[in-house]
Length: 270
Length: 274
Image 1: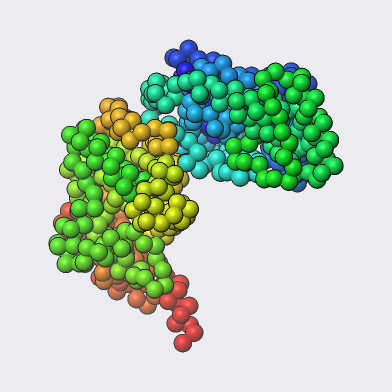
Image 2: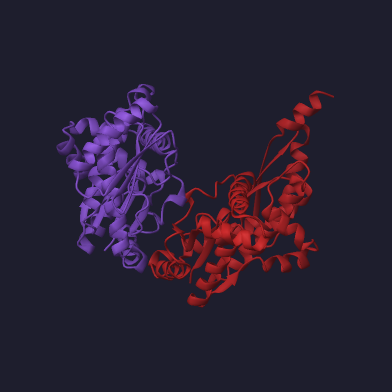
């Protein structure tokens, strides 16, 4: 079965769509759970992870690399959940965090700004001007986040398989579309698709184990053969090799591991 | 019955899906063939209409006045055809001027970039790398065209009811999605939405009548009442308003014309240097 990622802006009703799709297909609906998993596994306070996925990286973050570390932890937690298939994820950047997995249906839900503003006014009891500015600020924050970390614009339509506008189409219509698309052959979890998600999860595990000390590492895995790329010089690369060897003996599923220093990482690396 | 307006970053894919959707629905397909009729009816070269629809304004290209007239002619003809309902329209930029009509399904198709590059490489006998660059350049130019001529970014997904990427979903699935969507009641024509489309068509006819003599004009229609916005120098304002009223008043369906003339700042500045 498939994995569905639902990308959304605030008050776009994307969460509602995701929950209804999960209920109809009997899938697990995952949002905040990924943060909790990462928080438990890596012993990081939930609030820090929430900030990492919500706020765009500041100038200071570019030097401390804290945000990249937290995101690596979250990607690791998400990939682990995705290994079990039958999942609807409505958290941030699912379409980017699960890149290269063929049976992921990437959906974006959009809604006219005026309707989002009306909802914000009702919920927060603020005036139209303030509500509009809050939503636009939130959108901008998300745009910056994706652009800084992935070099992509979340509004770029080419990153999604399906974009649905909740206006003339209702939430129920959107749920219909997504459920029908999930039934298509190309979103079936074939053995090859399962292998790919397993490899992604393994690469994420390796990266999560290294990122704290070696923030610039990128990792790929194919059939359990793990390649670690780093921009670091020879001395650091040597230390990294030592660490990776220890990891390979401790971690399950790794057949072989190689470290490549000074080589640009391939596009599908995490 | 409803109307489907298909926009795409690949003309070939957009046309394929629009034609297939028309066939599945038993609707009429409205595409670039309409330019032949427009060219004959208004005695303009068809190639020039194509050029106005495809190429972004440039210093050495078509003048903005001529481009404006050609686009106004295409818009008028397309809106006239859309009044007939049961139409799937593609290739006439209708997604940029058929706005606020609830029984129109606005859809964007995104071709698979790799497949598109392979097609271009085959067609033009160029390397895949060169074809990729051409595809990318065409997308940018198309976006620029929509912004220059209609002040709408056609690549922005929020302008559409749904956007389907063909990277994972096939053309047949995209067609099925169109058919399914039109089954929703929201896309049934209502008295109000039909009136909105009629207003848009009347405004387009008035614009065609005015654009040749008066250059850039903005026209809105509500029933038989038409509002025209244009620019003129202070001393010419009254005369221009009278002339616009006279020409617009002769268009069939127009009962009343209101003209707003604002000061032409650019001409004023140009004259102050004389």
